[in-house]
Image (cartoon, rainbow, N blue to C red; front, side, top):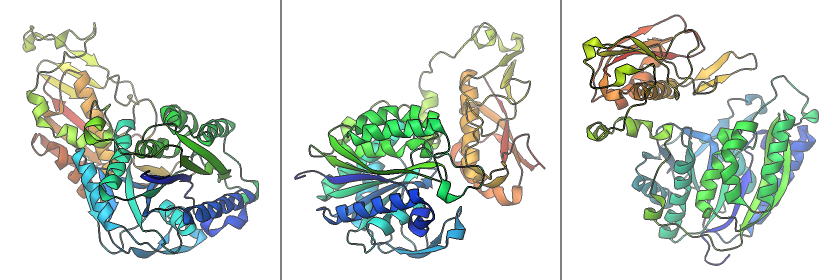
Length: 470
């Protein structure tokens, strides 16, 4: 469409089976055929670049942008290495990468341009590129998916891409690489009999596809949280928030679902979205406002020491918490328990914290998420044995939980005076844990003891034991 920053947008699955073994399953074959339709469609688009957002290129602190002009390597997927290797070469629009990073910088998020040989490109982006732009007819731009970002932040990252296109005078094809439901079979299956892993996932996938087929991108964005909760959305299906921000947060599209099939139980689709009105950029001022909060901003939030000099809102109290009254001398305050409503639930018969006089004593705090048994930064096999974990992700999540407990106790991270840290592999994990720790506590400087333990009660790699002032 004339005057539109986005000529067309696509949602595609980045599963390697579609590139390396489509013949093994009728469903995989249909998805591969849909990819061929998309390739031909993109060839007809008048665009300057392809803009990729893949849920498989994960970042923890901020956002990364591929800035190597010609990244080239041989890739093997870590989960399905038996499918074989994938040699690849991209042509990257480095000027746009810099412009995009600058726009995200202005939002206050950390950014990094990646420009060195051998930095891995994720499977999903490689699969999409090999199937829709195999000869590099269009240069590419690639931004990472922050694994902790929430709706407002992810939407803003999409809006920043639109502003970068506008300032660069460029027009893009947008490609979101993401599954719908992302629940895989837990036992080995014959690919010929592949199917969506649960009926509920299938029903939710079809609801989302019905809306996308009608071009209702904004409506889908409003459903993402519930969809992710009900159908285990791929990275909580947050890529749709990015796409919605990029496309202007409207329903002004015509949509077409080219294919929907299972890939080892996950919901994979190929969808095209054509703007019915020109896609334009929102100015920076209109995108800034109240932020609903996200773990992606945790380090920025935790190191914003100006917040400790601002007037604090009244602490949460309960009939069991008389000690939060500031008019009672601390030495006379009784001992009482504190149970946080926003941190991960205890796994045993103990409270999150106990207030005694001038001190808050926190129980051992791990990285589990509130309201679930999910452990960030960890991958399990089908028997729930740990395959791999990321100590940085786990450490950041532990600090997030500690912060919530302290805030629910009327305290804050700035008032921490002592930390004991338990690592299950100090040789392997100390450097990564220490890097994240220093980001948060470098100006607070509590005393600290770090020890290695043989195991922790759940399959986690790090736990904090904290003492703080109320």
